[in-house]
Image 1 (cartoon, rainbow, N blue to C red):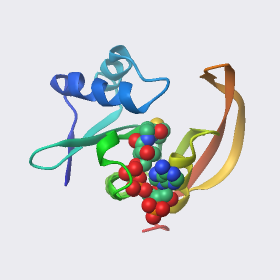
Image 2 (tube, rainbow, N blue to C red):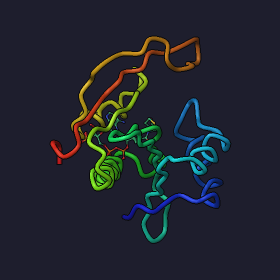
Image 3 (cartoon, rainbow, N blue to C red):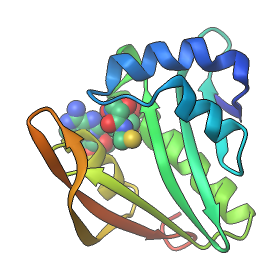
Amino acid sequence: MRLRKMILADLDEVLLIEQDVHAHPWTRGNFTDALTSDNLCYMYEDEENIVGYAVLLPVVDEVELLNISIAAKHQRKGLGRKMLGELMKIALGMNLRRMLLEVRISNIPAFGLYNDAGFRKIGLRRDYYVADNGREDAIVMECLLGTQL
Ligand SMILES: CC(C)(COP(=O)(O)OP(=O)(O)OC[C@H]1O[C@@H](n2cnc3c(N)ncnc32)[C@H](O)[C@@H]1OP(=O)(O)O)[C@@H](O)C(=O)NCCC(=O)NCCS
């Protein structure tokens, strides 16, 4: 498995995965904006398959994890954990000292992954996300990079 920079030509495949694994997926425009701004956008793949991708936003000495997705057929094989570990190493190598994220309160798999990876809950944002029937709270989590590896 390896991480490489995402490019515009990846977006057809990224959107197929995104629309499959998220109830409220990012649009092509969201990814295009990420690719044309200061975001860090990565594909996770082996020789044959795109397994997942991630988008991060560095801000001074911190980084926000905006999107991390593993294709449905590759989930629950430890690949999300491995990709997140690689992303943390890259961030640390860029002198980014803290990783932050928001996660839907209903997203048990993601919450499990983040807990596993050394994140801890630091807050709650009420009604942060659009949900199927109204709004949904976000849990805010942080990981102090370098302390969990
Ligand atoms: C969240 C996500 C990236 C996890 O990736 P993954 O490769 O399936 O996760 P891993 O196999 O590395 O699992 C790591 C840990 O996460 C937790 N976890 C992952 N999937 C889980 C599930 N379906 N139910 C409960 N816990 C789960 C577990 O603690 C797991 O450790 P374990 O297998 O030893 O119990 C993946 O489920 C996904 O792409 N979901 C849809 C997109 C999404 O919600 N992204 C996060 C918000 S942007």
